[in-house]
Image (tube, rainbow, N blue to C red; front, top):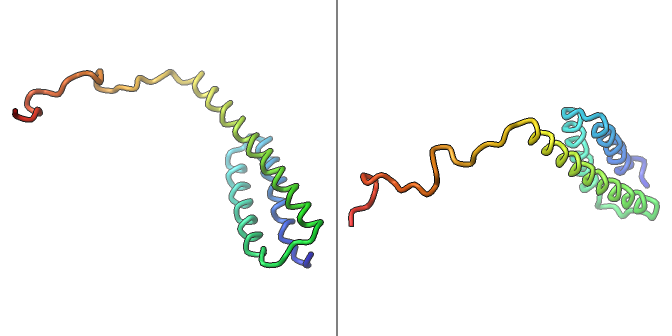
Length: 111
C-alpha cells in the first residue's frame, strides 16, 4: 500500500472504541465513535486507489470486528434498558385520564 495507509487509522480507532466500551465510559465511547466515523470517511475518500490483497484482508478483518462491536453495543444497550427499568418506576401512558373519555359537549360539532 501507499506510505499513507488509510486502514491504520480505522484499526486504531476501532481498538480505542473497543477499549472505551469495556471501560463503560460514555464520553470516551462517544468520542471514539466520532473518530471512527471520521476515519471511515477518510477511507471512503481514499478508496479511489485499488486495494491490494493484504489490504483487502485487513478491511475484511475490520468489517468483522466492527460487526462484533455492534453486537456488543446492542447487548450493552439492552442491559442498560433493563437496569433503568428496574430502577425507575413504570409510568402510566395516559396523563389526563382514560382514552375512552368523550370530549366535552362544547367541543362537539353541531349536528
